[in-house]
Image 1 (cartoon, rainbow, N blue to C red):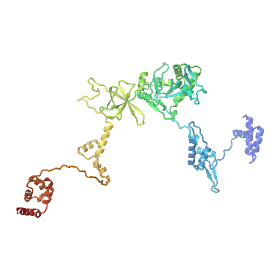
Image 2 (cartoon, rainbow, N blue to C red):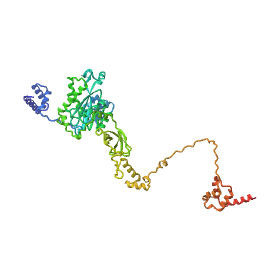
Image 3 (cartoon, helix red, strand yellow):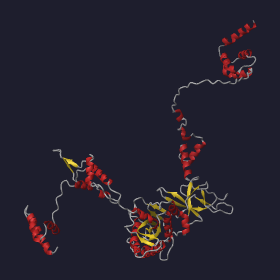
Image 4 (cartoon, one colour):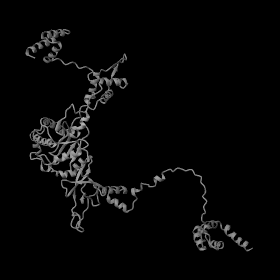
Length: 590
């Protein structure tokens, strides 16, 4: 707007402000006619040159008839209609209509005086959802991200694979994938070039931003992944300082990344492998951004010069990679990527073994080894000391693998930490003297050595004190010497038996078994032998007359099976037993 128009608009605004009620419309019409514009355009321009009073806030501002429970139900229905690509299929109007028809929500108010129901409008429901922070547009926003940092170059590497959507390597060289020929609607065309499609592997150093680029054919496989990581760790070109083994590798949960071969390679080289959760691609956002850089900066050049072979593509990719890392300024460090990587210190740069050794490590699975009572394990024809491994116990199995950094004199014990991630503990090889003894063994009569207390030994002491009811190892030993009852006699081992009420079984009818049982006869006892058995039973009732009676009654010997009968007769009163004997003698004499 020019100054003249601004002056005219200001004059119209002043006239409208001082005009009586009901006459502003005429002023606006006259002004619009003079300026040859519509009333709507005039009012819009008046707002640019004249400050108006803000509208008075309604007394019920911020309040809504829609309850929180109804808002949650509407929001849940809307979220259920959202496709995987983020497209929302159901509108708020349709969701409210369906819920109302099923008597699940009211979303309105009822006049208490007339009983008339006033449903909320779609716009009012939308505002209420936003007020409750339940609108789909609010819920579908990304969760807050956390800033991640690495300690130094080669501390953390990110690796990712992506299939090229622009090129494939035909028999006559790299060809552009025509969208009219290669798309999801023609899967046969895609299957025809499946083994010829270019896969792009990108490795980035998190601290410096340095990237490594390599192309492979076929598919995202564990073999290709291991090959790319091994090549990235090697020293390649004088103009490319990026090399060495990382301390941590982060990647996505793809089939190749979670394969045993890739895990063995990382484990054998003491590389901590961190796999991000499914759907959390931004956890390795640096390498995802590197894919975009490669597509824009490098692959766009392939349209102007077609490569003949995969080796030629990788040669061009290596040249571009060195150029980009050496010249492009990183937005975070404000320096070149190679320039920042050069800040790595000697103790931070772990030189990787040769390609052949690394490939062997990729297929060497950790082997379980049993811990002997000397706290040693056997591995690759040698003995290794595991006494320094945290929590080691005799008889346990440890996972042992090669240590590519010191393969001759050490190995690696693979442990599982409390956070569920693998931990690596270096164990030393035991050297032997000329007689086959360990050089660290204690010499008899000169040295006394003992291992640190194992968890099993510590637990045994605690359990011993618990069983003896003591608070120290010395008191527990003293209690054992006194042969004290374990647990102070509080445990009745027979209580489960005595407390169990056994069922009463009904007797079953049976049939007598007729067998020719052999008769067993016992030799009669002599009078002296019988007297020795009866005397303790009779006590004071035994007299000389008793022996005389026994002698007269059983002159030929006393049958063993009648001892109880004789005992019962002799325990009767004397007049009953002795008197009849005299009578019997008289009768016998007659």
